[in-house]
Amino acid sequence: MIKKIFFQSIFFNFFFSKEVFAAESGGMPQLNPEFWISQIFWLTLTFGILYIVLSKLILPKISANLELRKSQIQDNIEAAEKQRKDSESKLKEYDDIIFKSKLEAKNIFKDSREKVIKDINNKKESLENQINDEIKKAEKEIEVVKKSAPGKINKIAIEASSELVKKLIGAKINNSSISAIVDDLSKKNGDKYYGN
Image (cartoon, one colour):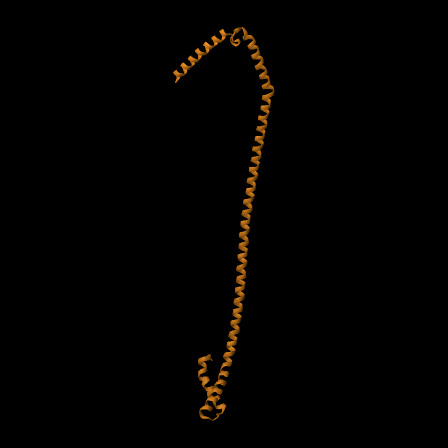
């Protein structure tokens, strides 16, 4: 590879040197040493003007544009950083609001649950009191019926016995003798049924 480059450079040097000598002999003014001083003057003048124009007019504008862009980029970076911090603070506020809302909802649920349980217990207690009152009333009524039942049963038994005897023998028997028999039977069997 290096040999190839070396031989190419020798070939191009030989070719260009041949062309230079041919141009000098053919009358090209650029290669004639007689015109070199004027060419150096105009070259220096042209590149001097170009240098002055570039250094005094064009490069300051490019530099100013670069500085302006740099400051704009810096401002944009600062604005983005500020936006990021604002977003983080808003996100933190949002998380705090969600946490507080969850806590508040939990407390509301807990309070509601306690209130419902309290209401249920109150209603349960009230219902139990009503049931106990109804049971006591029923027990009193049963007690009243129990106390009045033997008399009513005796009366029914006397009337039924009187009618039965009347139908069986065809004659009416005195209610007092039937009543005495029923009372005697009820005294014997009453302890069994009424607990007297």
